[in-house]
Amino acid sequence: MGELAYYASTYEEARAQFRQRATDRGGILTALSVNQQQGLFIDTALWQGSSDTLLIHVSGVHGVEAYPGSAVQCAFLDQWNPNQLGDCSLLLIHCVNPFGMRYLRRWNAHNVDLNRNFLDQFAELPANPMYSKLNDFLNPKQERQLNGFTWQALRKLLRYRFSALQQAIAQGQYSNPEGLFYGGNQLSTEASLLLEFFRQHLSHYTRIRGIDFHTGLGKFGQSSFYLEPDFSFTQHQQAESLLNTSAIYGEPGKRQSYRIQGSLIAGLKRFYHSQDFLMLTQEIGTIGPIRILQALREENYCYYHKINSQPQTAQRLKQVFCLDEPEWKETAVRAGVQSLLRLIETVG
Ligand SMILES: [Zn+2]
Image (cartoon, rainbow, N blue to C red):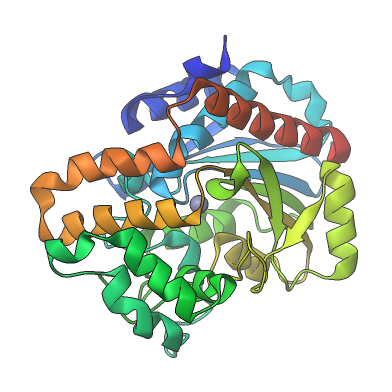
């Protein structure tokens, strides 16, 4: 089967494909119910080995990115032989944000960016004063303010450095519930379901290795790996040899990098705090941060102020996270599958 065939056109199709393939390969399926009435579930597939090592692969934390993410997991399931696992366990998490996948949003039904929501506490939320300064530009309330995006962006770029802007916008914010990159004011349903699932079934593992698959960041069609800065230098080296590639520390001050708060990886790292835990973010680059921001801003404006136009702007948003170009799609699937196979081969 060619890589393109793994791209589902709806959430329901992706879900069915994943569940069928995982069952065929002997995985134990669990459906975590985000909203049963609406048929929204996070699906997990587990292959249980006898050792203390658990491998994790995650897709769709940012809903719309689940189209390539699900394709990677389905293509992997077709290529993989479960014997390669040795005595390790493998957990595939399919589409952490099903609402976002179905409605082509990056955020969930409550506008929460799930990759900014895994905070250790919500009593004192992290401040982001620079975001407040950019709030009117990022979150316009009137349609006419959507016009002239490039000019508005250029003015901000002249005023602030690109890396400072990128950091302020993308690190997450907890002050505007209808704004871009909102991290929420409590643990989301999706995050609590996952953490509870780990508590119930996966807390005994002592060595954990994983990849959280995303698209959008980095150079067009290129795969990059990011490691959160609180992983040590030794872990950084370990990560690079594990995947046989370079890994970038997610820090402010670089063009293709920023530091985020409350990521899923940070949440799992906290969960496995006394264990040997190492997990990276894989990103497949698309069309660059400025055009991505423009599409996010338009879609979010329509979600709150012009819901009838949301489906069209959402389609445009999908185009920036899952390009409608066969070559890009093939590369994304190949890179995702190759990294997961490499992880299994090295650890298993
Ligand atoms: Zn993402």
